Length: 313
Image 1 (tube, helix red, strand yellow):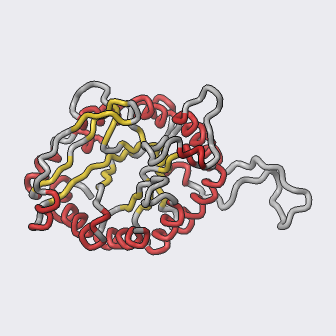
Image 2: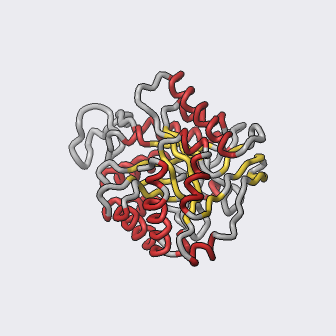
Image 3: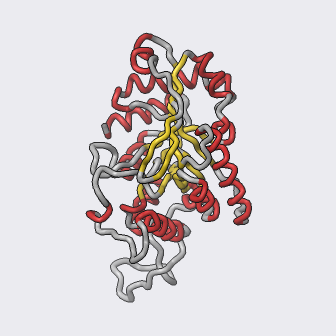
């Protein structure tokens, strides 16, 4: 799977896609350790953005993570777009405890993840904070030392994966870009894309209110399949999908629909998605267990037969 992830990223770049983003899950036979993969993709590609959606900050040492992220970003010549968050439900109970982390007294695991994120963001600024050894192995520059390698500009390419309006506001206040997935907290009972569009507007207002000067980025994730042949119809043609409501980590959540239809039908359906219209970046989820060749076909079908009619680049 790791090798195929690299090959699929290479194929995506060759097809003209803009980026390759990877999910991160611990205690699962999936992509648990993102930075070796990000660095490998960075070394094999030259143009596409390389990112995550998302790294669970409950499991992370922010200091070590700054070193890994800086290395991966420099290898890719500044193409890293790092999605971080509190994380999704994991395979084991309180898995972060096995990594040696625990919330402070009176603190939730979600708050611990946000605290780690705040430390990470501060360290990414590259300010010195560590007292140098008077007899170091290597000569030191003057003043306090920062973590190395430092990648200038990476701080502006950190995204927060938000499932609620409140955490979208928090992300905006802290100067992070916004990632909104295929689910969010059901806060109004409205269709998923309507609630997600409101979440994006809420985030942008919080950004402006916080006084940040650069323009933030916003991504939404969608499962979109153009039915081009019998194989596509076999895999996805029977999916008469609509929004679903369920409970995840004791949160009432609304899950966005899957779009699967012939290209002309898809185009009309996607024109009505308010959140896609509000966002500047669309992350297409792909069934990577079906292999590199088929997923390249899925990506190419959207790029050639759907994206142009919607003005996507």
